[in-house]
Structures are given as C-alpha cells and as structure tokens.
Picture: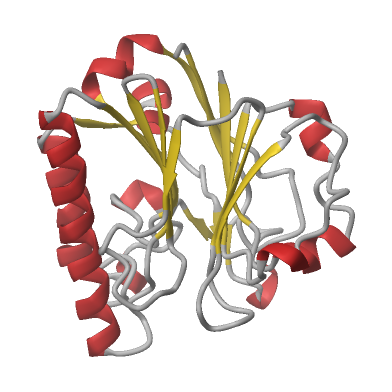
Length: 254
C-alpha cells in the first residue's frame, strides 16, 4: 500500500490552484491531509479522479483553522476523532483501524506562539505517546503520519545553530522524538535513506526559502518496529507545490 501525508495549509486554497493533480499520477491507497481549514461541506469534491472514495474529516471547532482529513481507497473498520488528546477541539487527530493496524493522521501543535502553547504541545506529545503505547500493549501495530512540527536532528533543517532556541528544534521537543524511537518506533525516511542531507518537507514563504532549499523536515511517517521489515520505501515529494509543506509517503505491505 502507498500512503501519503500532506499539510495542505488550507484545502480550498490548494484546490483553487489545481494542486491535487499529482494524486492521479502517484495514486496513493491512503491520503492523509493536515491543516485543511474547512468544514466537511466546504471541501471540494473534484480534487482528483483517482478513486479515494472514503472520506473522513475532523474539523476544528474554530472555523477556518487546523483540521485533518483522510481519504482512502478502501473503508476503515473504525475511525475515531474523540481521543481526549487534543484538549482544544482543534481537529488534530484521526485514528483509523483496519485489521491489527492503527493509522494516525495527526497535525501536532506548533509551540512558537507562547510558552503556554509550547506546554500544550508537550502535553499533546506525552498524551499521544501514552495512547499509542496502550494500543501496542493490545497487540496493535502503529503507523503515525503528519506534521509533527519538530525537526529531530541537525541534519533535518538547513540552519540548526540559528534555530536551537526556536520551538520546533528545542531540546525538549527533539527529546520526545528520541523517546519515540527508543520505545520501538521507526522514522521511516531515515530507516530507508540514512543520513541523506538536504531532505526537507517545509519551507518558509519568506526570502525565497523553497527555491534555495532552506527548509525543515517536520513531516513524518513513524511505524512501530515490527512493521519495518514490510517497509519497501519512504519518500519526500518536494516538487509538488501548492503549500508551504510538500507531501511525504511510504510504500508498505499491509
């Protein structure tokens, strides 16, 4: 199965640019979107022709803000939006179950606005990991995709020294990813590509950052370690325009 994740930074704006045409070329089995900024009825229905006929949406209570959406070629056995992790009703999580696998489509909080917002981000991280670990104890395999809003290592952003005191690259945020890997999850891109440099998934709109590839890798697919032998590929698609993020994906046997 091919799974692709993309922070669209406004699905209606992306649709108006015809920026979903790539889906017909790549033909994912599951497409997970973050920061859709729309209610279900506001989402265009003619984004592409590839048959991702099953749609799942978790919109934020605040209109025009945040939100997640998953599109799938096959229906999930169960989908949940009320996980008591997103304490602000910002529509940040979709949990999908099929077989013994649980797929999470997550738009993790950004901590740059204030100390309070950073504390919320870290609480979200902790509660989410606890929930995943509960599922693993029940024998579930886990896939997590989305905008994690943290670059893990210096290799994951263009200017690490200049951003060492910036939320998104703080030691406490990076340590959460350390913990995630330590307890049995795999960063799929690094698993496949090792220490490949200059591989980013987000670029500021300022100062021509994208054209100069001055970016951050903050969008991920993590899988629980027992799925690693089934992972065929992990990739980033920087050529796809329409958002300040680009899609990331995996090819995995499920």
